[in-house]
Each structure stands twice: as structure tokens, then as C-alpha cells.
Length: 316
Image (tube, rainbow, N blue to C red; front, side):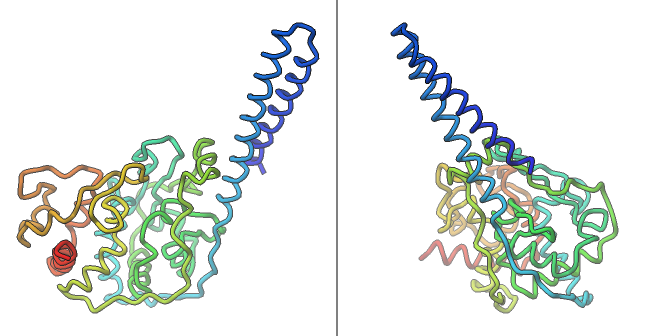
């Protein structure tokens, strides 16, 4: 309801400016007549345009939907171990600032334009997830929609939805095993500024990855290129390094990442060292925007799989 105030105000301002322009046009003074009516008309058009963009943006903000999921995760020890490995190497990149998965970081501060505040939620029982069902969490990971039907903006920009069904269940099992920690984070976590809503309305911001209801399976776990491709699919490497991993392009929302073909010239142990220390074989320190720390928590076998994929992809 209150979100409609901004576009409504823009329309009212446009009407006032148009009326002012008409009054100026009736003036007998030619300077007042032409300058006043011209400026009034221009300002009115601008105000109307802003109102239209805000209206479209608000529509897009509430347009995302995904079917609910009826699910109860067993929570076996094996699932919890697997879920922890994924959370440590992926979820923690945004949701860990101090204590594991307690959230609190504003991802919006890493975006070059002030389009909004996007707070990483506390994923322990101290946060909102204690009220969510297993199906709610599955839907949020897969399709970035919360139990109240709200769009989880930053989640929809990530590739979390490419996690296999079994790995998604494993993450849920791990989250359920955590003790309550940290402070409760804001709900909803994502809040656009007027600029962000207008840019959304103008099509200058993405509306998230497509909603999926298909079953997703993963190849057998192992140090293979096929498994490495799967790991890369849900890690957000392509958001920064480009869809072909040959480097980011100016204008993308995420930070610009370099061509990952450079990995072809590294030995495997050099790749592992880079991911675990943040310093590459040439002595170059990786940017803090690069989530090398969570990736470095992967097992050697998983890093070997990514290495095999990157080196073969580069060779092709």
C-alpha cells in the first residue's frame, strides 16, 4: 500500500506542473508564455516518466512466484556433513560475517550504485528460518521466494538454484542442526531504494534467474571435470568472470572478474594454494570481492574437480 505513494506523488507533481504550464501559456508576456509552458511541459513529462518507471518497478518487485514445496528432510549425519561442506564453501560467502551463517552483511554496499539494502539473513535458529518449513527453505534456495511469497532478490541473482535436489536437502539438514547464534536480521532482507525500483522498472536491473520446478541431479562426486562443472554451476563464478569464464564485461552488476584461462598455466597445488591463501603463483593478491576464502574450504578432491574443469575448458 505505502509503496504506491511514490508513483502516485510523481503523477500528482506531473499534473501540477502541467497545470502550471497551461497557466504560463495563457500569459500575455511572450517570455513567460513560452519559457514557462515549455519548462512546465518538460518537467511534467519527466515526472510522469518517473511515476511510470516506479509503477513498473513495483510490479516487477512483486511479480516473482514459485510453487510451494511439500518436503521433510531426514537430517541424517551424512546429509549434515554434506550440507556443511556446501555451506562453508558457498553460503558462507554472503551469510558469514563473524560467526558462521549469522548473516548481517549488506551486499548492497558492494554494488556500485545505491539501488538498495540487501542484508544477508541469519540462517541459524536465531533468525527467520526457525519459522520456516523444510519446503519453505527448499523453495527459497531453488527459486528465491520466501514463505510470504516475497522475492529474495540477491538469492535470485545467485546460482543457488542450480544445487541438486539432494544437495539442497543436505543444506537444509545442516541448517537445522545449527545452534542459535547471532542477532535476528531484518525481514524482508531486501529493500530497494527509489533509484533501484526505477532502474528495475526501466529494465536496467535483472529480475533474477528463471523459476525452476525440474528435478536437478549431480554427477558422481569425484575429482573429475564433470563434477567440477557441477560445482562451478552453483558457485557464482560466472556472475563475475562471464558466462564463458573468459572475463567479466563492463556494465555487469557483479564485480569484473578476470579470464579464468590463467588457471591453465598453474599446477594443481598452485591452484589450491591460491584458493587457500588468496595469493596466486605470480604473487598477486586476490581482491576481497573474490570469495576465495569459502572456496578454499573445499576438500582437495572438490578443488581438483574445479581445476580439471577450468583447465580443460580453457584448452577448448
